[in-house]
Image (cartoon, rainbow, N blue to C red; front, top):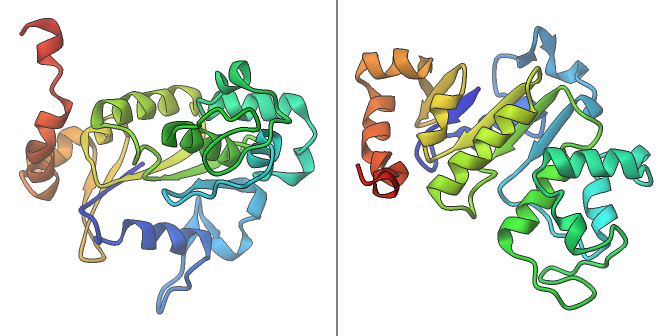
Length: 219
């Protein structure tokens, strides 16, 4: 499921309602037919755009996503693979101390690397429901599209909710929800929403040039 909309449209607020961080003024929240109050914390993984860079080891930065598996190397390796951070294991050890800018050898960590660490943290324990709030905010639009394509491939069989104000990735989703002013204004597949000729199509056309790769093929 892709949730799209301009900045301030209510996307992140909707996610916090799903997670129980906010309580609705009216109505109730159900996930897969189960009231959100009954959802166990270990069944939902979430990566917010404002993720935390803990001044601890790489193991801890990833393992905090499921403390019971903090010292399970296989679980952490798997989570890093799912979060697209596995190559970091070739760059550093699990016990490497991380600060907000570098590891204990003074190697600078990029914003994209920290973001992949945060995604790996969310993937601990192979949770059946995953929520990614602007997970590619530090990537360019084409990098974002590549990352979402990877998420689609590795998350097969699980419920995945992707949130972004950039819309090019949405065509990868089975269902697209478009928000504006705190309300859901459109709901459907990429093709269905294009045919509606409404908010989604307007946003898609406005952002189309961000995803233009014709210069690579000479078209």
